[in-house]
Length: 257
Image (cartoon, rainbow, N blue to C red; front, side, top):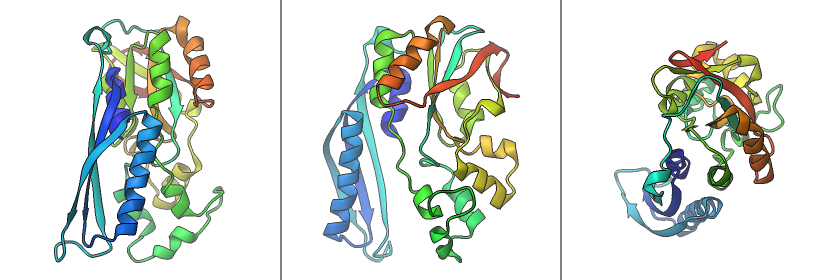
């Protein structure tokens, strides 16, 4: 999530540090956690340069842990992304997510009553090709390498990382005053996990788009005449399913129609 955040400014991640708090330091578990962090750093092409492990017996249950971290990146001042030239007609490109990513789990736990019904994680619901637990634990996709490739050759006017707050809170972060993101709901390639969450929890459509990424992990805004080139670069660099999501129009915020 950290590296996805900083590429929204056009920065390349340089290094990452982690912090692990646990109830009991179980070496094999800590090693597994750190190996996952290291894999994320490989995907982001940055270095894992250190970290901290804190053991809290009596304050945390022995089997629980909390993982945090931060990243540092670099971008030339003149290359920091600016939305000043964004205009109506610019194209919004979607980079698909792998699932829930790292947001909305409080609502997910409530909908499926995981505290009282943990076995539901083993169930494969209609429309799903894997058990619920596996679908929810799909690793967050890291978009660093393909996005940096696009930045080398295309005039990217804005990038939004779709995290907590969904479409309605995240996309406007990259929009200037007077511009809105116009998106047809039928054009959003919603993943089955979100259809399941909406159905099982009777969650209103607006709340779904205001909580989850709905299958869109990141959006890039580019000039209309460069949209095909941007998609070509993305398709050739690990994002074969990237697609046109919508356009910039006059207005404010996000218009889902």
